[in-house]
Length: 544
Image 1 (cartoon, rainbow, N blue to C red):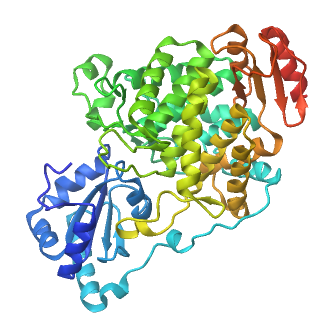
Image 2: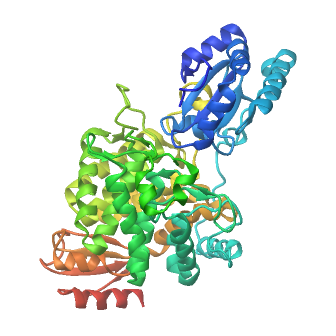
Image 3: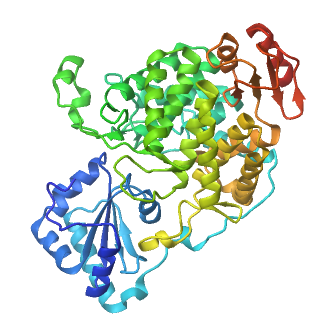
């Protein structure tokens, strides 16, 4: 990232802010990512310009942050995309910020910030609004939340191009899965748009997003986390429809993850792949095979790996795909052995903290991966799952919801932040854990968390569709299929393939007669079933 820049970058940490305080100069914070093409362009065109670099080095303390390695910094200072160029007071408050800046734009901003600092000093700095409004508005959980989200999806649905909203167009896997159960036609047309436009037909895997309403202007970076989530989403569409047109995109993404993004040395998945040259994607297959491979960020991060594990295990459960299961098992072993410490998820293999810092997003994603593994592979992982849940509650729970991490650190990291998406992900995974363990305390914690945000639910965008999914599962009770049978048995495989992707399958249940299964939803409990055919009938009886 820094090969072409002349700026004397410091690392994020107390030393940089101390230096700025002693010199009474602002901090220039550059938020970048290894996969970010515009970040590389800004290095080559702006930060490499000698006079600009000298200006920055003389009048500011420049700090470079990789957003994947420092998600708490990203979430507090992101200016709407990457690169983000943020000017800070030595105390960490924001003076001003922008995205990509070319040489002329940077010169103007540097002069403006210097003048601002000389005339107003730290008085010009502000704390961003999300960090000033600590407690979200609580409310009651009702069925209207699910109906309201469906209405929002319907209102923003693009009848022409598929997907939701105008531009940019993101794949939105949580919205796809929410709609799949509630408006299948709208969902499948959006699945079709994602696979037709974002799937790399040559190398497999999904591109990150498109800048235009018609899905043109592809941003061709490929990230592990979005690909893992889309494998799960397309696997669930295959479960519901039985159509190969939804299985095949998932299969191509699985191939991509287990080849290009597989870090064999770490026995886990690499973080991302950069876009490569723009013209390489327009070449025919022969020429593309000869083109240089876009660089891969080999870093192994816990949260994205957890999403990939969940996606691959879901796909394998519906297809018996041996490759997906095998690689998921290997990454799961790395997650459990090297990225868990007494229930705290270590951010990445390269993290060298003696005392790992729990981050809510990592905790939630790891919990979801472990509960999926307990449903599909082996129930022994529930010990780790409960350890993760308990550590999250013990370390991050505050009032009725969860903080993104400990309210401590450099800059604005000491300010509490309650990210809605990660709170929802943890609540949803807690519902799974409650069904798998029979521990109602996890269900009640999920309820409390969802209630903490319910007062604002009408303002939630389609990217938070999972909130409505979790509320629905909580109010109605998730469809639970309990089996006195081992994972991998015919009855277990049949349970996994019952066409409700929001169900929970509980193998090795010890309160049933061996070789039987039972279906539950809330207070509705079926008779026992001994065969896959009987089980299908029992599911239908409970749902009717």
